[in-house]
Image (cartoon, rainbow, N blue to C red; front, side):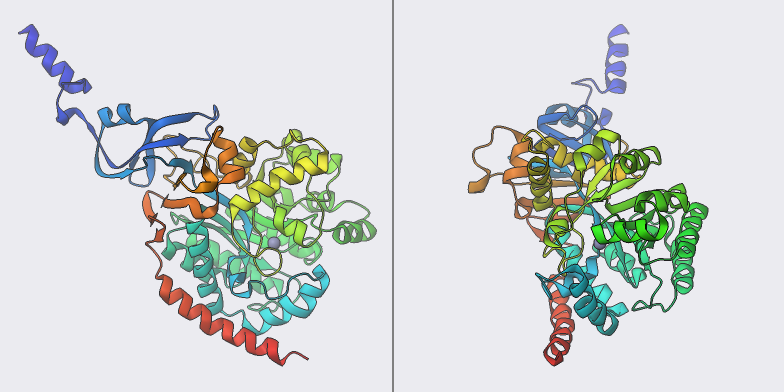
Length: 466
Ligand SMILES: [Zn+2]
């Protein structure tokens, strides 16, 4: 009798020898890799595993332990690989992929006035944005990005293209005080944004946002209305802030305060704000950004390429600001959507600007691209680290290329040695979107054909330029 009780108890608790019936069921078990969790303890688990049910992570731990606890419908072997949280591109204009390299090595003003604004007026259509975003999604998924924050036009197409590609997006229609490719007035763009938020709210992959372009291209009234819409709907607010010296000097001359103080006093920071760049911010601005819970998106390549300056990332973080990492758009600000490059550059820029090689060590640079990026976006409860209860957004990295050998420190290897091309699998929301380097959710041939057609038209208008 007693013997039976022990057996029944063993079955119920799933003890070894308790039989397979006691194992908990999961959909997918990723096993045998080095798990870099980016959780609060920054745990790294050798021969680790991640158990996934539906869209969520159920458990993270040693492979042996998880195999004892779970029976998986499917298994993904990560032998010899790193298992990382998916990377978060905290600032981009994805569809600009079709303008890649169109006008490099020019001043910001010349680039915008003579190239980007005229080209966008002529070519940026709903179709252009849809295929441009698909091309960007292909590049980002291949490079380990699982979430991106986007500010562009025809944002409905961005949401559609991203959700079809299976990549997570925080999408904001750009609001401007001068005519944009899709709207003539800020009132029209605000109305569109409101409907856009209603349509996409609650979507598993798409978070609709409010995106006034900047404090120098939007009037005080437009900025106030954008903030009110974000507050009313609970949508995040994306904006460019303190990007150039010209901007902050202009605002100081006109308003008698810094860009950050001006934005705050307009009520912008009542919303959940992710501000791109934050380069020209003094100690008072940094303290204000921290106190008001504003997240920043640091874009090292873009800032270097436009010669905008170096964001004080170390000081911002010391003040308590969450800093994410972005690529910005690829039409002049950058030429690729590659967060491995941005991590590497972010770390090195802080070293050279502070004169201290200990500034922003590799582990912290990886944090910017993962958990801190999630915090800057206000989504740290869902993404940014490998922890039970979060969405299953994770990537696998090969470490057998010559540039990956040998390795002594896992964070150094990721930030300073590994490349976007080392990513060979990716899961977003529990779905495998990349396997053995191939994107499963996008017809790559079709995207390339459509891109070639749209780019031919851009080249034609460039050839006609006087
Ligand atoms: Zn930008």
